[in-house]
Length: 276
Ligand code: KIV
Image 1 (cartoon, protein in one colour):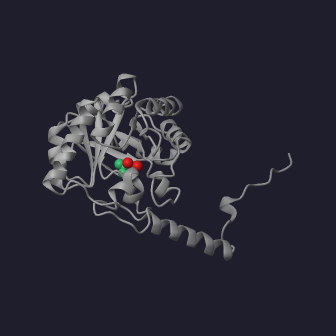
Image 2 (tube, protein in one colour):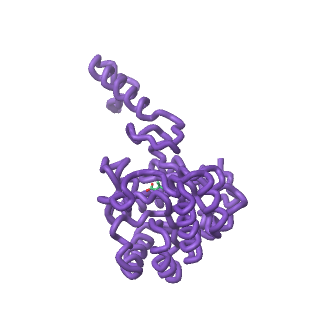
Image 3 (cartoon, rainbow, N blue to C red):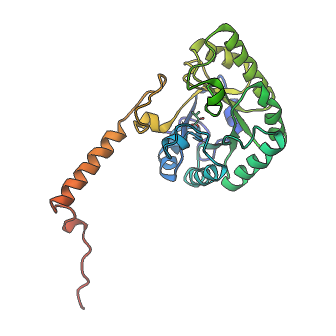
């Protein structure tokens, strides 16, 4: 059931910012029309994350994801949803070079997909870009902490903000991105205390993933909660069902029935038209 009061109308970045400190913000990733249809009424935001490179395409990281991929998947998710705001990730290399390059690519993604906002990774160093986009009509969600597009410089998928000075840097990042105009910020993989401090410092809504219970909202990768993401399972993932096991069972049953010629049978057959 929808829990947000804005039923019947797609939620906007402004609605999400207003939820800060009032109602928990619920966000899940979606990459296809089928996923969007199933999740739409249960969440406030759908993220067409560049995690699709890993969970849909089987890459080791998100660096090979392209703008074209984001546009295809983003359009499918927008078409198949009507309640949740849809945020599309700007892929690696599409925004880091300059605010102008970021604007050109973000505007194309916004126009081609009809999404509500784009998301980009980075702290204080991205504040100028966030401000450039927001001032020119592109709503932006930030992403700090463990930022998978920086995998080669942060040295792996590991928690951030575990020392006092790292936590202080993350607070400064959150405030800078928030003051630049981001309506929300994903805070990934940090101790609960750091997540709480970031949430308290920034006026943007903080959506945690492995950042503890004090954030303004929570997001998980949908393939992780469904048990479809393979063997790597970060500490912060709660798996709610095992669709991988169910898929294997369905395939096994289908295979047995085809081999034993018990499927198809008359229930699934078309009938000949009888001559009149
Ligand atoms: O790409 C993605 O799915 C993300 C989430 C992990 C927040 O950025």
